[in-house]
Amino acid sequence: QVQLVESGGGLVEPGGSLRLSCTASQSIVGINTMGWYRQAPGKERELVAYISSGGSTNYADSVKGRFTISRDKDKNTIYLQMSSLKPDDTAVYYCVFALGPRLVGGHWGQGTQVTVSS
Image 1 (spheres, rainbow, N blue to C red):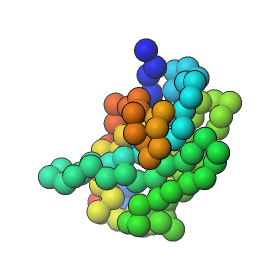
Image 2 (spheres, rainbow, N blue to C red; image 1 turned 90 degrees about the vertical axis):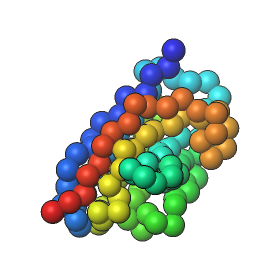
Image 3 (cartoon, one colour; image 1 turned 120 degrees about the horizontal axis):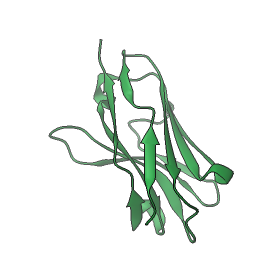
Image 4 (tube, rainbow, N blue to C red; image 1 turned 135 degrees about the vertical axis):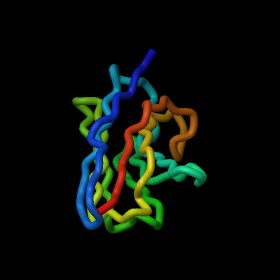
């Protein structure tokens, strides 16, 4: 059973930065896309960003220019560098390693809390 372990969440002031990491316990054959969802209380789950096996990236409009997704193939790890954080970015962030496009059909992490508040 593949496990995804996230880290890097926490409390940060508006305008600050955080970097989330997500490491898979083993290599997953056939992975197509890897990325992040988030869900805030009372809101629908939102696809934040993903990176394809070929290296192309895709971002939600709400985070374009502020968040950057990257990967380290050798470490089975993806990262989400978040800058210029806003209170609206407060949510639980989940990483996904998926066999399909746009994070469809994926393995999910347990989630990490990001809170942006002064």
